[in-house]
Image 1 (cartoon, rainbow, N blue to C red):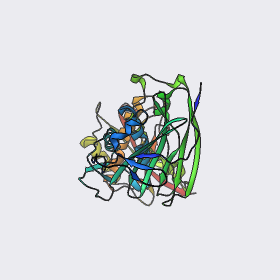
Image 2 (spheres, one colour):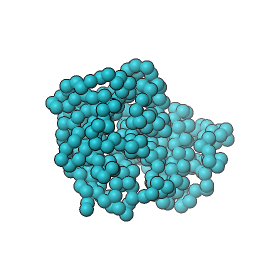
Image 3 (cartoon, rainbow, N blue to C red):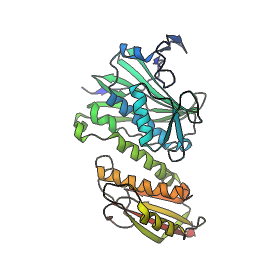
Image 4 (spheres, one colour):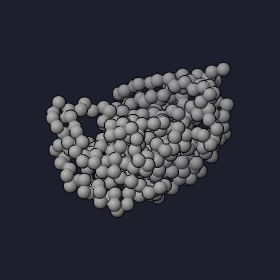
Length: 357
């Protein structure tokens, strides 16, 4: 029987598991809006089945992958402050943040420009037990709701983002489809302003089947989802912008990495520096080709490692004061400079504008 989750808006019983409050087990029920109450994290398991640590890791990855793609909180220019985690969800969040490239500072109190708080919530209803997970940085929050179904946690809402302008966010639901079997669930992104007013709403329904379920050895690794989200930071401006110039290749360097290494090395750094001597910010851009067209990023580890190498080159360009606006990530979806790349190689091409369109 197919299990369907409908879009829903409901007041939930709030079980606070933020890093700033979870360390205080003496907090008792406190009235909030409507029928919501705050309860200590130790009481959360009393309602329904608590998510497993692996499930919490998937949910943390889902939320952080959206956080990564927000222009206001780019992992390449943001350090997150957070209390030392005491809950499984907290540990999974911190791990996902670090893997995504954020600087992470452990602080004793609610302090820092980008202090991160996190919460979970649950409620018992006729359809089952519903959970909501939320992260908050500054006045920006990202949340998503789930329903428990035979031990699996299925999204019951799109990703909800509050406090920023609507922007392109890619939600990767394959991490859920591989484990929940036959189901339909809502996805997409909803943006609301600081007052909760709707800015943008683009929901969609994701279908999952038992044939999509994968065993533990073949499942999508959460790290791969975060790699893809980081790549989206660089590709989304290219996909949404209207190109006003025509470019042709001017110079190119081939950057070869050592086996199983993301270290650029002195020779590659010198090659990049030499290429940048010819770079003119008014007419040029830099194209990064990390892997050739092939299998899906999600199902093959080769592409994820290649994207990591491409991101390492991108970081070197950022460190050399090259703006993201002057770079173009070809990712794994272009055969612009050939059908194949030498193994462990990233092509860095200086492209020069030849005319204004």
